[in-house]
Image (cartoon, rainbow, N blue to C red):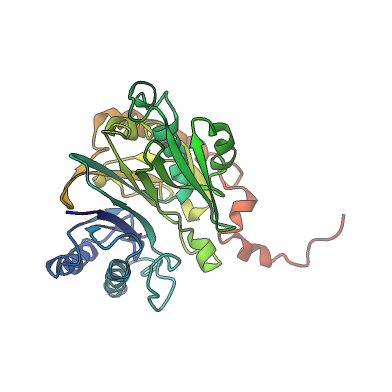
Length: 365
């Protein structure tokens, strides 16, 4: 087999109940649609997973990145699911479907997309992270930890295959510009930008020694596409592990600390990023706190061997307990910053609609 492409395309097409979870009938419908595509030879393999109220389509194929037939398959699957979601009166049915017509690619149409085309190694462990109630910048912290922090990734010090470091492509979605930083020598420059995770997003990571792709994330921001708040972006991330990349344990270690991310209730609050098993990724407390799950696969001639539920491990219990403590602390702020997002980020929520009521009442001091 030649090159294989891993495409992870997600959308929120209806919550059950509220924004908390996904209805099993929607999941089964998506499996039937992708199963038909596999039987017709379009896909090599697929899995349908969920994180909270997001439907996650994980597909392998030989069409390359941004392939129209793959994106059209995902789009049609989401439309098909939306029809059922409306019949079931699921909350926010079709929430991430921002256009009436497919235009060759789902990017810019609502769904989130992460893809990478690779040549399979002798053993190819792939980790797919799925998030709910947060934005694409949530990946900045763990990607930095995985690929640039020797206190997290011991291999950066002791493994000759990654000792030279990695390159990071950082996107400014507001200006639609990218810049590539080389680590470790440009770490300080890079941190100036990726620390502002609501403005700059790590889009891709490559191994410096040979430019092999190491990680790819979804960077779509719904508010910038729709021009108003329609829901959180709930991003996805693909990471390759072992044999010239960080080990599986080094990749997962980036989530052992429940750092704060933007999103949570109405996309307007800071909350801890809680790593959970698949069955615990049904956020209900204040519609949260934000969740992250990880599906582990061994890729074998394009076949997805798995998934393994990588956060279904008692060693992450301390991170979950800490998340609860942080959630308590952040909720005590109520409508005050930093519990609530700063005003610059609130411009992309429903707050401007409230502010319109007060137009004309402000007087020069």
